[in-house]
Image (cartoon, rainbow, N blue to C red; front, side):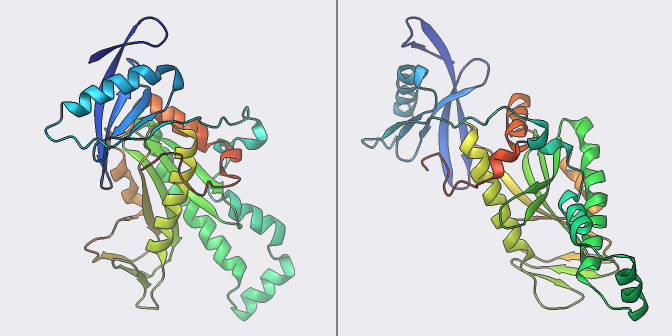
Length: 303
């Protein structure tokens, strides 16, 4: 705990905590309630002020802390004041917490699905259709959604079918003490699945870019959350396979978690990444449809 003279006329106590992930190391200056008001890049010595009212406090405390390091690297250091955008008040129409698992696929089937005659003809001819794929996907998302919803009693928040641009969506977003997880569901009934470092094969078929697409999806989620939140939100991509007869993971450097639907419970005990307050802040952003309307091209942080 370090005390600095507040720019508002009185002393304020800031705690300094260390954050190290993805090749970056930072020291965060936090208010007594845990709110981050600034951070310093340990490698460069640059200081970023997140809350302008605490500018002097943040600079004083973090500069002092950096100088106490064994070999601090202090650059001339840009000091940035980051003004976070604010979402409009949440309305029922924009509240994604009401979405059921597979909501986007339900809409597709309702709007473009086959009529009775088309379904009968397709069944008689045993001809697979795009509607069959949508139906399978919906069944898979419902099963995974039910498993994820059970994690609520462990302090996790779950959102389903978050719409993004270009008619795609995030199947499930799990937010809790262990971080944020972007879940991509794949339903391959009675199929064997092989997962390598960067590709997936179903019944020894052609490689599918599931892992690459899951990583790209997680990066989109990070850009949105960092645009509105003033603390780091690590987002891990997750591939969940439904209905498979065998799941073999042979990857050595895979950065995507891989589970069968009943194995997602393994996420429940994870902790130490987000505080309860941060979980609610991330959830309040993620549930707002307007946050996802246009994914920011870059993050607000300087790294």
